[in-house]
Image (cartoon, rainbow, N blue to C red; front, side, top):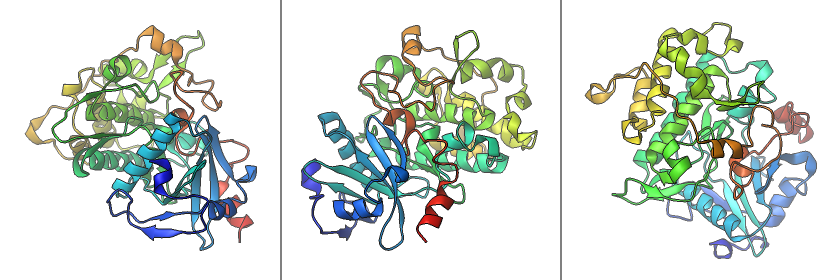
Length: 387
């Protein structure tokens, strides 16, 4: 796909609709334009970096703030992920999905351009540099949960062919200036032909969010995204990481921690203590029940994203599907847990993902592993510098 898209070194900048036939506005950027917008891909503009390359903040000549993902190497794997992401981004258009702003593809360069999200990622607010500020009150958390679910509903049920994201996690939920969530990073996405219920494929993603049937046997379906969303929902409610390392050195999943509390009906004890008891009890119960349904071990028992959105909005699911008041945690096999690099101690390290064949993009998402000191207040810093 690479060089057939556009010559990145050209001065020409084209405008149009999606290169894949969708209706998302996009541009083919010249390398010179992106070089200028990012101040020569300056270290001061770098938002994050990983095995895939780096992401830079930029500002175009017409004042648009952008995030530019610049791929580091052009091996076959990177080329494939670039092609997949551009194709998927070109197909989708939804307020809760980070769409394609443009791209640049030349002989030896691959760059993808997104809108810049001033509030960065959900990860940065739950576990990163903004966690101490507690900008995510209960209302915003529910807004993020419902918006993310609506984005997945669109991928699973409204776009053709249906799309499985395969890497739903906190770092891939970006937040705009109003804390509206946008699901991002489609490099691992799978397009599912009509009539196909599941596929067997090479495992991609981040341990802690992976459905057991996918992590262990590579069986991927829409219900894998549902499982990942269930973990994400627990993370939003509790403020805990999907996998945390205990003082003893043992790793514990969020479902293992939550299972006894949910079983005993101690829902209030699940809520992030940073909220200081400020939450809606009805929404809490609905959300916990949705999460418990989503993370069931049997894929066929999990709800669809349509049902998830309906319950989160306070509607009874069609068909009288019982909401689950109990959660049965699923343990990953020890060999998988041993491969996990993203523990509570090293979330900010620029390391590889859970499998040796994966790069950091799978662990940290579009905006990468953010440098805490550099990004204390990115929106203000960039705006002041470019007035």
